[in-house]
Length: 266
Image (cartoon, rainbow, N blue to C red):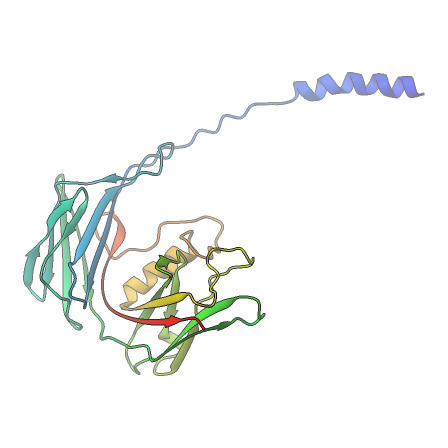
């Protein structure tokens, strides 16, 4: 009985090995695309536009910085030509964005043209910020509070810095269901272990940058987070975030207001 079973297994083993098949998956190479990231704020800082290019599927993740582009931003009809200060980085000098102004970006690269428009919203200032334990009492998170202006379609993005280090998570808020209401947003970083470097401890300096966005830019950050960007991606097949750029480019052009609040954690 045992010898027969043993012999059968010896017979079956090479048969199973012979059934193995190597499947060669052919990955279709996608076309490279330009990535344009443009920012105008109400701060007295240069307006910047970064231009790079995606790689093919099998290439590394080091995007190519694009030099030699002609980059312009129009501020309510007044045109500013940006200078290239380093490969792929273009900026203005001596200008400050104004809430309510309409900004138009135009980029010309190797015979291709790209454009976008964005109107800078009015500022909304945070009035409260503190760091406290979350609902389970294990980790501490920063919270920021403000009053949303009634009747204005605002979007909000928050960037958190702990001891000067930027948290990569995307924090956003939509006032669609809370127009005109008081808002208190806890920036839940999703940490779940004691040694996570994003933990907030006593003595830490926490800064929250609050950006007021138009609807198109809120949609960009929302789809970046839910579609595979840094954050809590929740769909099975990541896709490129929606963009306000024309001409088949990736990225965004954002004219937004900025304010900041800082606390030292007790």
